[in-house]
Image 1: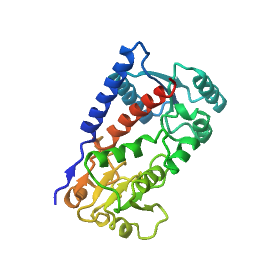
Image 2: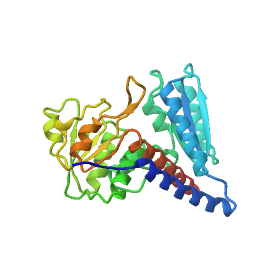
Image 3: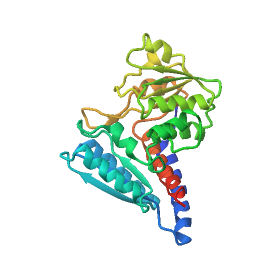
Length: 283
């Protein structure tokens, strides 16, 4: 079997174009474009790259982006004060603190300080709570992007065995909830799981979000499974790869998301959708 590659870059481009058309219709009616505020604290090189990608995507979609580059020396109180200002600013529709932040900044306090209607990462207690209840809300971007990929490819979740490797609040936990709401039977595999390979090999849909390069090999993959690789790592040669050993997934899976070009572009695309949703909620 040779897996069908799910082209997240192409799907994400289509979504961003539809977002742009929607924004153009807002502007044609005399409205301002949506505006995203990004908080970049410190000089983490990976975070700077991610922020540049978001700025580029915003520009292509017609979203105004304002990046607040904040020195590592800033205090938690400084960050919270800025978020308070942005909450009150009606010209700002979305607020996104780039994670991770320096160790002296409590990310829970930072995320919790954002008005839920402007929480375009979908990580606040309010938005995660509405996700748990399967109520409309701003969804975490990467999990929402994974579900959009499955939907685009016509992959049915109902009745399927789904295994999620990882339990982070950013990806693992919310994707478990989204899959459950889609009527899959979901198992979580994590660092304390006994015999994780055995559980993973039962999966019809396998989501790898462990943050461990090439953790998932052929011993983890059932023949014909849908394999979604959320991980992203830089190899010694500078090339990007994921949590899944790609040659093994290509040999055994029916569908596979590559790294790069799979889930990553969808995360950005769903952020654009969340920005527009947050914008519309202000009118």
